[in-house]
Image (cartoon, rainbow, N blue to C red):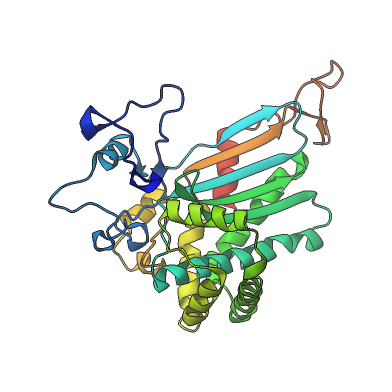
Length: 342
């Protein structure tokens, strides 16, 4: 047998999956897609030969994966997890939204992926523009990501804000306000045109350099794409496909995807309301094949101790300092209030 013909490791003659590893069991995904029927999260059609027939039912591996607990998230508001350590010197908050893998197998899928890159590029520029306009605020960085992960087995949207401890409230407020501004008013026509041209130019340059890409990088790309269920194309094919869909993108469509991708931040604390609005006119403002999303995890990292001015220190509290200030004593309720109030 060739490597590709070897069956998956099964127990009981293929009736059930092999026993789960006791130390590293499979990940139990809890997704943030409030619209469980949205087309973007649909499995690969059986006609493509990659899924099971309805009459035969799912294979054992698929049944076990379902039993393992990978489910869509309920409409509850997550509680922030706070990690405090003496070696940390800056405040950082990471807001995550975990979604089922949105496979790129059609031109519509490619268009959705390209729109997501435009939305993140515009928001990154808006957030980073605050470095010049807010010089008195010691904000280190804003970072955004919206991508599939073969290692994680899901799509993850991430917003990371890093700042000096004494300016943590202002940093979070700037990020949340900018996200809500994009949700309310969307991407401007000039922003869309600028970043569309920039991303197309990057794609064109990549296609022209296709012959210079190391084989190991190509192999990693093929393995990652295949694991995620994407159609694998080389750089030239990908650029040609991208050029064919760009002309069909409307600004309203871009803004609808922006609301879907960023709703886990802009509508934080209103998950139940978004869930109840599914199928109504209010839900029509979101992308049809994605729907609204919710935060699945919030992780905050803070210094163990700060001085009276809010600057972090690497040692424990001294008798003369009188203990921690409000940064060291930050509670879940205080952080949630900042996120909801913007």
